[in-house]
Image (cartoon, rainbow, N blue to C red; front, side, top):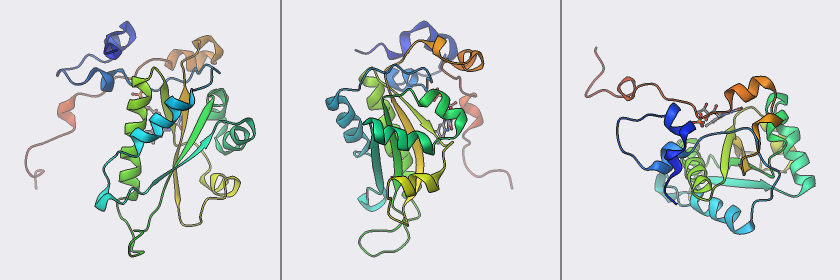
Length: 200
Ligand SMILES: Cc1cc2nc3c(=O)[nH]c(=O)nc-3n(C[C@H](O)[C@H](O)[C@H](O)COP(=O)(O)O)c2cc1C
């Protein structure tokens, strides 16, 4: 299965200058999820991929709280801002991505914990797509609620909540979200890099 980038909606929105891995172009963040359960094997594989991310000193500072049982899903939905709960409330799995801000070895601050947890989220999203699943990260949630409802250790940081599942019909969304239910383009690559120092 190597045709992630070939669907018309991807081709229309994501014309690309270089031939990069189709999985990367084919990953996107839909909001219409099907209630179909995610097989255990796929869920664990998605977490497995995430934990193969590189990290500073191989600290592996990411942690994942998985909600897939109804009572856990209810708790996780409570953490979402209303705007996100409206659509992510239908996802069969919600995963809080957390990070540990201190190095385990010496208790010193790990300045890269968020960077590394972000890499893990990226790996997670790609493995999901490779399995015909979609992962949609959300920053719109109340971190304190995640800490409280899931008894997260005090000094950890809640980085994001990720909705995971199969895509569902877009007509379950509000009209406003239906319009946005498509892969997003990117600004031109040239805006993002430069060779050598910035002008002084
Ligand atoms: C850290 C982070 C926070 C995000 N927060 C939200 C959010 O609260 N609600 C939402 O609908 N989408 C959220 N998104 C999804 C982005 O809007 C989406 O990734 C972006 O528009 C690019 O689209 P694409 O993922 O389809 O390529 C978030 C994504 C990331 C990585």
